[in-house]
Image 1: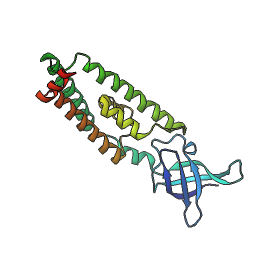
Image 2: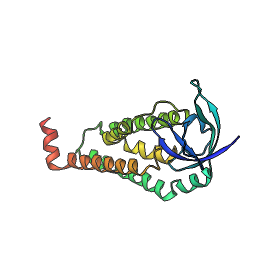
Image 3: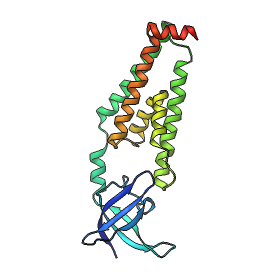
Image 4: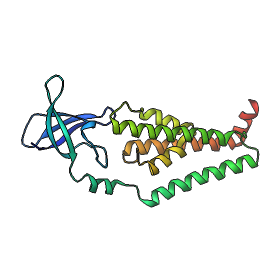
Length: 203
């Protein structure tokens, strides 16, 4: 028998929450593994349909959960082509800035390698986190992903958001990521300034 309800609690990091069936005061536990073949992850206040089953302790839990109108909502949440182009333009601007800095001998020759390495690591971290989210496994902390971006992996983060469509909808995460990009870019600019050059020469 199918039931209908609202997702009234949801922890996206741990991958579980509670559904309140329509017209009832009780709440039913639901795990991310119950949401199979959905075009996006569950969100708070989603309307869902589900069946009931019992866990090993005999408690009722939601099974075969399905988000109503998930395809339509996922379509509205997708990144627009202009956003992807802006990310690519920003990455190309970084590459041009690094090339100019190296040409004028303002940065160590290994600087581009740091960005390349950190971006590769960050992209892989996003891919693994998305896989873990789908399988209901332990997720990578958001603070870890943001730290990677701050240390030079933000091009990889932007590419992962565009290509993998992961971590591209949560507003607070996106705002923090852009803060990391600004901080990293400001640090790069400082290193190419006269003060930064004096500090590098002192090393």
